[in-house]
Amino acid sequence: MWEDEQPSCTHPGLPREPIFQGDYAFNTGHVRKFGVVDFVFFGLTLVISTIIGFYHGWRNLSNMSTEEYFTASHSMHPLPVCLSLSASFFSGVTLVAIPVEVYNYSTMNFWAGTNFVIAIAAAAYIFIPLFYQLKTVSCFQYLEMRFCREIRSICSTMYILYMIAYLSFCLSGPSIAVSHVTGIDIFWSTIAIGFVCSIYTAVGGMRAVIWTDTFQIVVSLIGVLVLLIRCMMAVGGIGVVWESALRTNRIRFADFRTDPALSNTFWSIVIGMSTIYLSYGFNQSQVMRSQACRSVQEAQWAVVGNIPGLCFIFFTSCFIGLYMSTLYENCDPVKASFVHHPSQISSLLAMDVLGDTAGLPGLFIAGVVSATLSSMSSGLNSLAAVAVEDYVKIYFYSQIRTDQAQLFSQIVSVFFGAIIFELNHYISGHAHLRYAALSVISLTTAPLTGVFLLGILIPQCNLTGAWTGLLGCILIEIVIFVGKKKASPMALPDKALTCVSNCNLTAFSNASISSLLKLKRPPSPLSSIP
Image 1 (cartoon, rainbow, N blue to C red):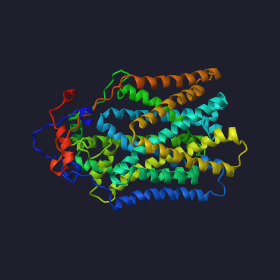
Image 2: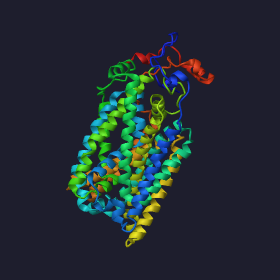
Image 3: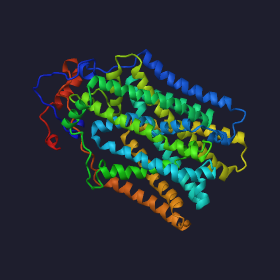
Image 4: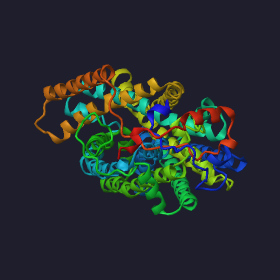
């Protein structure tokens, strides 16, 4: 498969002279695994997160009202809220997938960093003041106040579908990466992450989510920074990386082609992704945490304060992708069968450059898991809030007592956690299900963004206009989805050049040697395309 999909720049007959000496997979022929200290770091992340959740659940046991459970009684300092928002904005998939995206394609992904400013500015100055003044637990209550209850119910249902698909997708990549370096089956690694997250979210509520996110973002930042520093030590300065990226056609910043079928151009990244990121402003998990602040000004400060942290994590991950492409320039891990899935390349890189120091690989993987836990916990908390506020109180039990609402919220958190775990179990092993999950995310994001922007920015819009826009957008999304399935495949971004000419064949198994020899052929004509 990879033989046909990726252009090759191998050169048979050249003597093997490794550019990088050391116990890297392309020199030894095998992948390092976790040691005892690595497992300790990984386990401590799960244990500490659980302890924080149970501590806040026990501390607020006597006064755990619905307001406390979902918004921390509007009493949080903006700093931990800011860190919590940063932690959940980037999931573990981000830390795993962004470097691989740069490795597989090009530096065009750097443009995505410009979208944060647009999304955060819209959230801070359009959405946050409105939702904070309304003091509503569910942001979808605004849609009932602005239009009608039916639109509220439809949109909250779409949000539930969106969040289930999104969290299932977020859990799949890190679970595969953890399984790769620990040797633990994907099923059990997913169980560990999902169980811990569901339990501490259900017990501790919003306050536990914010404080565990604060701990987890620190772990993630340390893990990413350590990996970048060790990559620089192993590979060299930015000059070495730049020359390697030029040789393999990864340096590309000025792709201004207007073909809508191309998925990695300036316009598709900056304009298309900006539209997607606008949903950050009315995302239920973000709204709940901003309402945990003591005033609307502090809520805006917490949201705007995301920008430095988000930019640091994003661009650091992009640079890690460039260092990854340099280290594996002459021995592609997928072609060499070191990994079975592209999302495992990041964990392979961590083991290669950090593996000689006990505990450092565990620290990076702990950072990936922390990012996953933060996204999962905030997502589960928001799903519980939507279930209680938009369904139970409206259609079943309007006068529900505080203790009953809390118990139901905890049950719902665990219930949704189980659904997400089960869905992830199938997504991890089936590419068509991953595509289906991404399709659900796309099908629900656009209508939700449209109806909220319509209600807030267009005062003249009435109920008829809202119904027309919402249903019309859903219909258009379905037509695009069906048409995409029937039409020819969408043009993929230009693949970067990958090689296997520098793999140490003497250290490989016979099966690996056989697959590599098939790939050692003259360069494809595609390799001459700039």
